[in-house]
Image 1 (cartoon, helix red, strand yellow):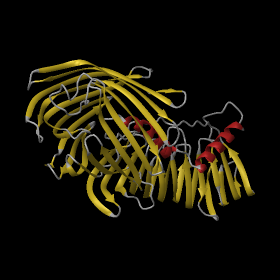
Image 2 (cartoon, rainbow, N blue to C red):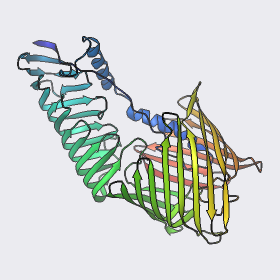
Image 3 (tube, rainbow, N blue to C red):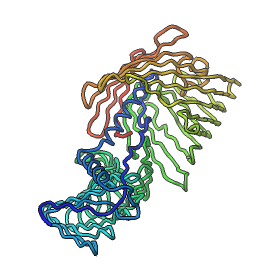
Image 4 (tube, one colour):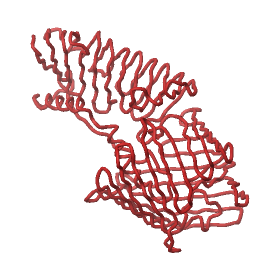
Length: 517
């Protein structure tokens, strides 16, 4: 059979579903409400990361066409319907053996695609055993529902598409959002194993950062487990680890790489976080933070997570967006989050008990046993006509301090509106009330500046790499403008430079960090 002969065999079904996106990947350092714009920026970044290439769109169209031309109902017990195209194709209907030569193109109805990587390639296999073997160079695509999204080029490929298992050698490509390479890949229905591999989310030809490991087990939308890991900046090894587990769920932090910056309060600073699993659901975490003004202000945590619960035993220094510091010595922190059935509402329970200490210039030293509890109720963002979003939340909190025997309790609430005008312009407006604020709290750490505040601002993207943000905070009770912030975000390869000027305080902040954050 010659001249791009097509052969259709087998049966199954196709379903393609796009996963939901995370909205909290990156948070701006702000108290003027500019972090409301992160909702849009993170959604856009997710859309860019998960956008289908022309090749992937074509695969879904071809798979849908196969299904549309088959008799119904389909029998899931039979092999997956498959189209073979080749310059020279031989097929034995009795044994199921086939061999295709030349430029070979194979498409399956469950959104698998196999191509010979050369004009004189050879592809062979068996349609009954559902096997494909490409001894030379090969190109594969996988958009099968509930499996990793794969685009890969390599050699010596074998794949059993009935069992969704196979191997490929000397390969390079992309698994979900991870750019990968390795000497050998093993594909399974629910995970991928890479030997002598590299991983990065930096798409540059020469990545600004990447991880290499003797063995990588990648569980899509869950985690990567890496053995004998090296952390690279360009072509330099930063440090090594025997084992490293990275959370790759939507919204999770990126790998452990340093951040550097400057602000008027702390001077030049460098920060890096490290984590190490202790046992199932338990991790030890350490944050190295060194400033030119205060020296080392690091911290450590023992963290337990399970089914929406997070418990931490914390010791060390913590700072907020206003560069207010406290030292926990130590503190127990608990958080629980849960969606209410199938509704758009979810609740959050926060609790903390521990000793807090404050030591900073122009303030007296304070040490207190700090007790804090809050039950919050949140609604998923409501999308209105005209690309308007409405965001609502409320909660009840109690804070007690032994230093001055004080107790503050009461409700807080937030009403926020967000408008996406086009690809360049966006704006927000927020009204916030909090019973705890810097005017009545013993510690200024991580509380609102004022009790009642109106926060508003906008962002303007003037190039693919540059975005300007303006934000202000108005103190309703005292009828005065509290803060005005200006930001410039500049993307450089797979890093981001953030410049922030706080006009009312005449202070500067500069931060440089790898993307994603």
